[in-house]
Figure (cartoon, rainbow, N blue to C red):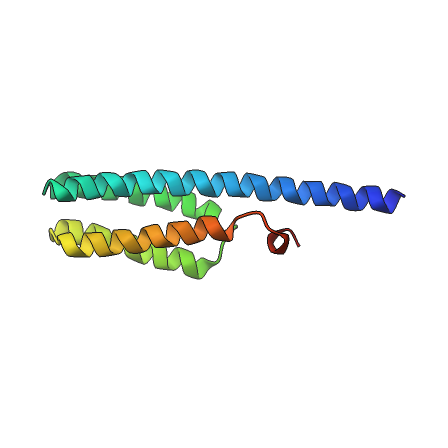
Length: 126
């Protein structure tokens, strides 16, 4: 009977940790997406200086949060996301609207994959 209680305790602990991880990942993805929406808005207004400033803010945010994310997700995905951030920043400097849009879309795709990979499932719990 004690073994069953221990197993149930571990199960709930694991589900709790997965829930906290999912909440954290969702919050980070939502914040990053908000930065990207601002960048797109400024790009559409052809205000590349403001877009570059938001890129800097996004990079600072991402540097802080990627340390936490690196404990939760595969590093390869983080590296691809960081590459896209650098492309966005460089494209803002060079006023390349198409490149900003492409890299932003790619980054959003990775954000969605990040959230989906952290969903609570039997695979993640086991």
